[in-house]
Structure formats: C-alpha cells, structure tokens
Length: 134
Image (cartoon, rainbow, N blue to C red; front, side, top):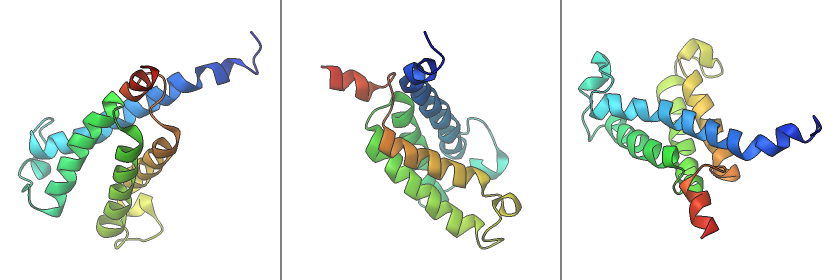
C-alpha cells in the first residue's frame, strides 16, 4: 500500500462519516425545537407554523434522511438552500460579511457541507449506496 493511494481508498467511507456527523448535528436543531431533546429553553416553544418551526421540521426530517443516507442528493440540496436562506434572513442583517460576528458560522458551514453532499452523494455507508447495489 502506498501513501498516494491510501487516502483515496477511504474517501467513500470518510464521505459517509462527514454526512453522518453533519446530519446528526443538524438534526439536533430540529429535535430541540419540536421534541425538546435536547431541552434548550429558547427553542422549546417554537411554534410549528412559524418560519423557525418550519425550518425545524426540515432540520428534523431532513437530518434523519441524511443520517440514513436516504435521498441524500435532493435532501442535501434542499437543506443547503434552507441554510443559505437562514443565513441571509437571520444572521446577515447583523453583520453581512462577518459570520463570526453575526452568529452565522454554523449556517454557512451547513450550507456548504450540504451543497457538497448534494453533488458527492451519501458515500459508502448510506441507504442510497445500498439501494444502488440492488
């Protein structure tokens, strides 16, 4: 095994790890808003019909789908757009080009990780990969 081929051999598995960890972290936003898990006082009473409530449903359902790697590409594309929207609606008005100052770092990071997943797919450990093998 040479060092030049070693990282390339693990790329599909590492892609899956990035998808799984990102989806789990993202899903927690929705579960905090709608399930109270984890309990965060400012999020626990989010109305389902509010913008934040609708985003929370997308975070929860989309996060579960991404965690499983099911319909990864379209779900990731949709969630990337959600995060772009969240950044420009909730964070950018405070300091447009300074995510560190406006609290939008995670929105920007999720946006681009999900944009990458929408192109790259779910990786080796995904239900999408399992479905394509059949």
